[in-house]
Amino acid sequence: DIVMTQSPDSLAVSLGERATINCKSSQSVLYSSNNKNYLAWYQQKPGQPPKLLISWASTRESGVPDRFSGSGSGTDFTLTISSLQAEDVAVYYCHQFYSAPSTFGQGTNLEIK
Amino acid sequence: QVQLQESGPGLVKPSQTLSLTCTVSGGSISSGSYYWSWIRQPAGKGLEWIGRVYSDGNTIYNPSLKSRVTISLDTSKNQFSLNLNSVTAADTAVYYCTRWGSGTSPTWGQGILVTVSS
Image (cartoon, rainbow over all chains, first blue to last red; front, side, top):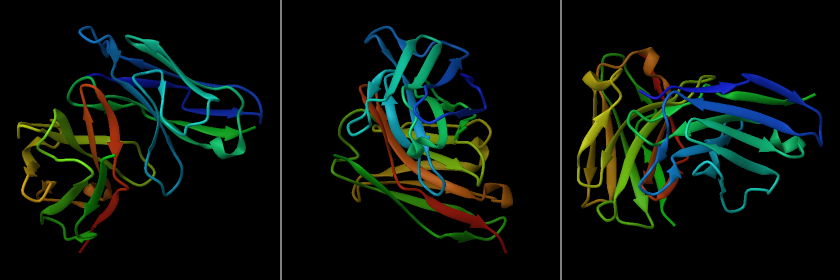
């Protein structure tokens, strides 16, 4: 199984400042035949389903503010929020859908400092 | 754009079988090359992949649940289903149905809360 490890577990950032969440997979999630990283990032607020922010490690979903960006390849990935807004308070998860069993990071709880 | 909607009982008694259905709209469940998965999330905890059925009907399950899980397609109703038997309180969770493919990013349903209690 591919183990997904996020860091940190929790993060407090001031409004307008940058927030960075890391995700490391125990095996590569890069599929060589199409050069796609099967790595997604989600935002989850209380009582809501996970919202897909980023797919293929760096492709922002339609409607997602451009302050959210994803980077990385292979086994190391980063979600960056360039200027934190109050509505960004949530738990963030990374998710590999490269192979079964599909697995998730443990989540990062993002708060306002 | 495809949409997924979970349905089923919100309350299941211990030792019984949890049965959920995911109705797919905006696309055919039997066309394309997609993985149709179930994922669950206990209150206050992280996300756990339960298993998946491919468009051709082949299944793979999480080893931790494999002995109790069945996932299947119903192409006539454009649905796929989850059966989890011998449930306990530890199976209480929000259950999500999802879809992704080799070139298609994940799509999620809104989720359904299932409580296991007598």
